[in-house]
Length: 333
Image (cartoon, rainbow, N blue to C red):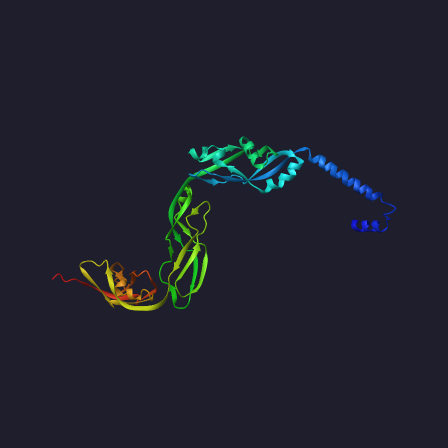
């Protein structure tokens, strides 16, 4: 039988009217316990608490690169009533560690990148934030180390971090752009000096068939702030069409004393181009060539190389990929 069962059994079999001594004993015990507790709480005690700290009023011309501890382990002294009243509040509400005020602006005026503070020197000033009834006896760690770097800023390029899929016969016809084009980064000089770009947060776009303009967040970089959290991203999407044209073959590295003749003299160029750019493209937009240096007395074929194409085309092919040739001496007359 468990304890609860035993109590129920005892109550059932006890005649309370005839035998009330147990209840009188319990009442007396309760009263004496309360009196003892009240008497004990009047005594002074020491206990250890973890005090959350908020570092404020940092030097304006510097940035903290190694954060000091977020909690200070403190030994406090007070009577029992005060400890009960304050201990929960101390565990929840952070105290302000006003850096410039506590150091008389020594960090801001000093060019050093490392500054150490002995916490015992600030016990009385921190005690005022806790309570006038609570005495802080000791604080750990006994030394706070602050590491700073010069504050710097510069503009950086924005890069997209996106995955794109398109409807049939649609594709990306130009580069993804942003409004504004750049973001201003601000933070420790050691980081800003090496920072070149910032990417957007990752985003998927599926089955695109029209231009997209969408606000997108910049990916956070630790210890770096940007002048904006979001930028407008422009994704240029267009339907494509096929372009075919014959392009004359250019000849490179041909000696002045000879002529290099190819058969055919032109090759067929085929590619995909957006309807936005179709009117801007022509056979002069392409350069294909053969190189005299690749001639071989044992073979009569030269490979056709693609030298230059418009940046906005896709899937370019050249046919034929090799052409026949012959070499003839130039007539001096």
